[in-house]
Image 1 (cartoon, rainbow, N blue to C red):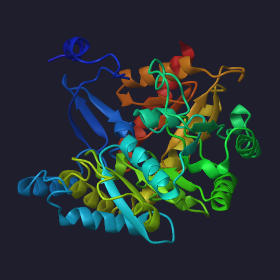
Image 2: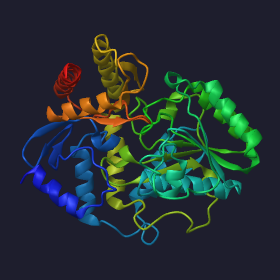
Image 3: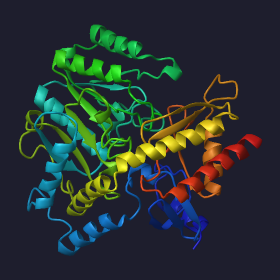
Image 4: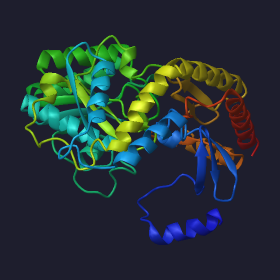
Amino acid sequence: MLNSDISARRDAAISNGVGMQTQVYVQRAANSEVWDVEGKRYIDFAAGIAVVNTGHCHPKVMDAVQKQAANFTHTCHQVLPYENYIRLAERLNEKVPGRFEKKTVFVTTGAEAVENAIKIARAATGRPAVVAFGGGFHGRTFMGMSLTGKVAPYKKGFGAMMPDVFHVPFPVELHGTSTDETMGALTKLFKADLDPERVAAIIIEPVQGEGGFYAAPAELMSGLRAICDTHGIVLIADEVQTGFARTGNLFAMDGYDVSADLTTMAKGLAGGLPLAAVTGRKELMDAAQPGGLGGTYGGNPLGVAAANAVLDVIEEEDLCARANELGSRLKQRLEMIRERTPEIVDIRGPGFMIAAEFNTKDGSSPNPEMANAIRAEALSRGLVLLTCGVYGNVIRFLAPLTVPDDVFAEAMDILEASIDAVKEA
């Protein structure tokens, strides 16, 4: 079986709306490595977009899933509940940042978690409006698209967005926007277009994912917390991509002096199985009427079993420390490459959520062509990378936190050779 043969079948059978960065069809995977249907090995520095933080098919996670599958795979928690759903909720209530009583609801995807967080905020406040940030990504549902601060490809061609959603610029010094300017834009929004007493929530990614791996400055998060406290607004941290040890903390908000009222999570929660959650202040989480939250597959038993095992693995293998170690080593290697590669204008990110941004050689404008060429060259050499950013000029590094040292070193050599090859070309 060849990748090209499957790709032709894919073109005939699957919607063009499902974008694909590679035509590598996976047959099996283990930890940080995957093998395609032709037997070629790849080092995975995408991890399913920060999903398998504990590695592909971690033995402890797989064992938990297999044991659960032998008992039952689905009953719908709203019909016939199960204890491990409760146990996972208890653990998240304890671990999610915030010194207050919390409750949790489980759903299936990150977009669904965001949708439910907005529902909860609106139910609790009786208000309709939501403020989000340029460059943010919150999903492909209509509310998720509306909150997302990037038109192409997420909003293009889909008509009118949801009402009462407003955007302010996200502070990125590299692109000329400071925290003061962001806070000023929020003040102007409240003066000119939106009564803050109509705002149910402000939603923010502590580190923008699809937007380019820009971390929210501490002063921004403190400023948002103060504004929310003043006006009775719910602060939502979208930790769908940042969660579960990726940033060197279990959650990115652990790195700030303030806490969000609601936290959305998915991706790394269940080690590859579809599971998402909203955890937040008890009084907010209880605002919706019974039946207002949930879903047929929300909190699927297999995903819940996997998530409980993922939390065990993160603790037992100290993956937060591992993320910081790997991120430091990656940054050091990138800085060495940067010394002879002026196109690299920024290297950033907490823990092992690292990005390198590329501009033209004179630094005057974004260089998505080079970023994509490096991605393609690395793939041809057996290293899977992802690009991101509003301009498409950022390479993001999202390897499993369990990547062995020898595989990591091999990936670094491929990365450096790929950058050199693109420069020479």
